[in-house]
Structures are given as C-alpha cells and as structure tokens.
Length: 217
Length: 217
Image 1 (cartoon, each protein chain N blue to C red):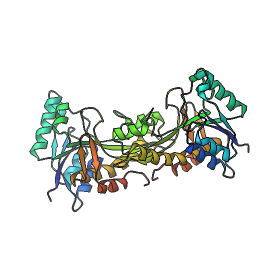
Image 2 (image 1 turned 45 degrees about the vertical axis):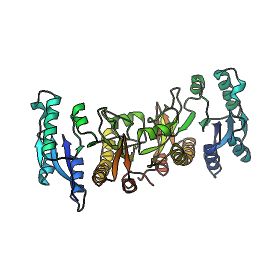
Image 3 (image 1 turned 135 degrees about the horizontal axis):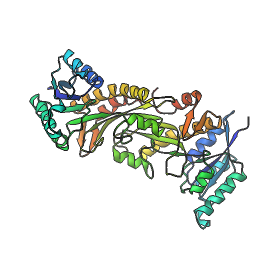
Image 4 (image 1 turned 90 degrees about the vertical axis):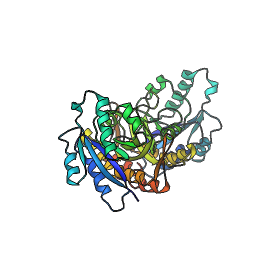
C-alpha cells in the first residue's frame, strides 16, 4: 500500500516533529514524512529532520513581501514534494485563508488545550487563570477561524496545585507526543474520515485513541 | 469533631442527592446532610431524603410573588436548620445575586461540563455540537455569573462516536456521583479552602480527587 506523504510545518524545537518521525519510522506505518518546512533558519527541528534523512526546506517569511507570497511559496514546495497531508507542529505563522482553503481537509494542527476551551495564544496560561483542574491537547483539521475546525482527537492531563505555565505545558506536550502521531497514523490508514464538518472515527480509531486519551476507560 | 451541616437544593430525581446521602452515611464522614429543599412538590429526590431520615422542606416557587421572596424563604429555611454549606443538585431555579452573595463561599454546584467550556444550558448538547472528544463535570463555588466561580474539582469522560445527548449525559452523571460527594467530604474536612477566587487543594485532597478524575495519573 502506498504510504501517505506528510509534510510538517515547524518554527522551533520540533519535538512533535520528532514524535512524528519516530512514529512513521515504524514498519507498516501508513504515513511517511516527505518534507519538513521551517520558516526559521535556525529551527532545531531541522537537525532532527536532516538526521533522519527527511527532506527539508527553509522558507524564511522575512524574505517575502506579504503573507500571500509566503504562503504561495509554502504551497508550491508542498506540491512539488507530492505532500498529501500537512501537519502544523509548532509553526508560528498565521496562514492565509487562501492557503487554508487550498489545503482544506488535508491540513491539521495540534493545540495545547481541550478545544473549544482556551483558543488562541497561551492556552496553558488561560487554563491556569481559569482554575481548570483538567486540560489537555486537541488534534483538529484547520479552518480559517483560529483553532476551529473538526476535532480529530483529544487527550486530557491534570492541572496540579502549584503548576506553572511551564510545568503544565510540559505535561501537555508529553501528551501531544503520543496523540499527534497516532492521529496521523489513523488518518493515513483511512480510520479517520471527514463527514461534512465532523471527523468520524472508525471503531479501530476510537479504540486506539482511547489508549492515548489520558482517560481511564 | 462536629460534622459540617450540608443543605441540598433539588428539583428532580435527586441522583446526586442520593450519592451525597450515601457518602455522608459512611462512618467518620466530615459532613452530614441536614436538610433537603425542593422547589417541586413531586421531586423524587424527596422520597430518597425521607427514606434516609433527612429533614425535607418543600418551598414551591409558584407560591412566591418573585425571585427575591422565594430566595428569602430558602435562606430562612437553611438558617433555621443551621446549614453551613449548600449544594445545588439539579436545582432548576436561578438564584438571585442577593442569595448567592449571602451564601458566598458556602454555596457549591456541579455542572455537567469541564468548565469554563460549555457554560449554561444543555452543556452535553453543546459538547456534542462542538465535536469534543472529552467532556466531564465540574464542582465549583457559585458566583452571580452563571457557571462561574472557583473550580473545586473536575472529572473527565470520553465522548464516543454515536453518543446521543442522553448517553453522554448518563456517562457524565456517573462521574458526578463520584466527584460531588468526595468534593463535599474534602470541603467539610478542611482539605479544600478558598484563597481569594481560587480553590486550593491540600495534597490529601489532590490525591483523593485524582481517583475520581477519570484521568490516568
């Protein structure tokens, strides 16, 4: 079976990229990482990609006159490499509506909260400010509205007394590293599909995602 | 040690009331149910209370000219019975700001969502409409703003493919029956305190609440 070619957009350390690369390296994985694009020249994630023989592209947003021009370069690179699914992984640029629509249903993101709670910036800080006892992370298809779009999967973590933004972020990030690769695997394997504006999980997908949900089933 | 006298406000079946009564019946529980008030004459929860020799009062809101008059009757009854903590348990009347302020920091509620997500009416329906994969319930101190106030404890449950509002509500309700009594026990035992607008859990409280959080720790 042909493996789904995945492109990953990064700006920084690439810890989710590493989790995706490690996951896709397993035998019989339904996806392969066909391209990593960074808008930051010094992103540490680029080293991870290079070490693992994943093609990399640096597309420095500062070299483009505006967002549409930058996004056109992204788009061209993804198409050149035959990318079929794009994963945002700590990518710090807002994408234009045009790009998002061009990659509609083929563009996913992971957000460090249980959406629709705590959209936007600093969701961990928002969770602490709200006094939430439970937070987590969400894999979702991307839509032009910020942090909206069909929810694929979620994983919950406790918020503990004395948590700082850093300690909570680290706990959520550990959950992301389990959730994101599995969600990609299941999308690539056809176990997660879209029906209108809802992601639909097959029984296999639901069973597998339960193991990384942070919940006792 | 004197046990904390708890009053419970109900309007219906009283399944959370039953969980609270059963919990407080255990030896060495730090709370006792000193009064159940229903605004509905036929509330099934009244039978549960009567069967367990818990004092009951029916305060029919239809017999009062307005909300302040009804709330004054509630307040008088709670004070007469020496109630120190009031638990809303499926109580279907909006309380006036005056009542809420009079019982500030001594009035708690359980809401069937992971607040601040899905405030207001039909939170389970809201969770399904949002495509959330995780929902749950929240015990919180009551403030005049709807479903606001310091969060005491939360418990998470999965939202499953094919869930109806009824099936999700039942799963959340089962979590409520574990969470609410334990939260009341811990408040009564002084293991949960308020510091300004934050509930603070002692290590004991945090450890105990983890067992009913629905999370794998």
